[in-house]
Image (cartoon, rainbow, N blue to C red; front, side, top):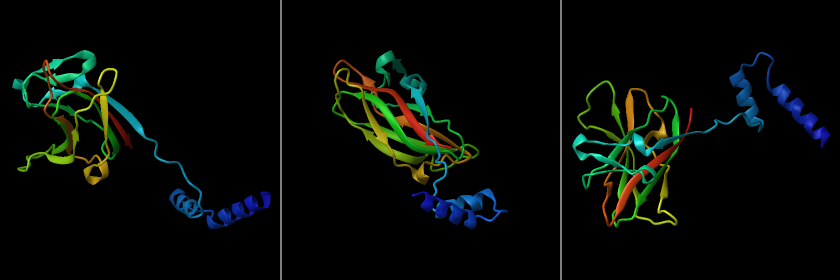
Length: 185
């Protein structure tokens, strides 16, 4: 076993010339089967208190532990996603409560910061938050892992999430509790 390690070290040493740059050495190490440091994921949690209606006339109710919802049926809540330019979103996990028979819709959007775009916002991802119940308090989660441009946060864009159809009535509850964003820089 020791002889194999020495032979391997000699092979790698011979493969990397003395004046090799760090990037060349990394490529050679990768070719030799030596793995370098991986990009570590980072996580950000966004509480429901950061979600607001898209229109001020929609209003909202803060239900503290239950989350937030609009007061106008059929309207939704929005929150900004301020991640560093060049980072890549791996997953967004939505935490919500939906005891109704209707889906809530998850829409991840971006818009230009420096000019008007006639097409408006551009969808980065689209998904549904289906009705579900889970003991003891009916909070559920949905992981979204499909994004336009592989989840890359580009320069000159504003990114935000919209959750549609939030409401709380005597019969049904559709509230946003918060979200978890996993990304790499």
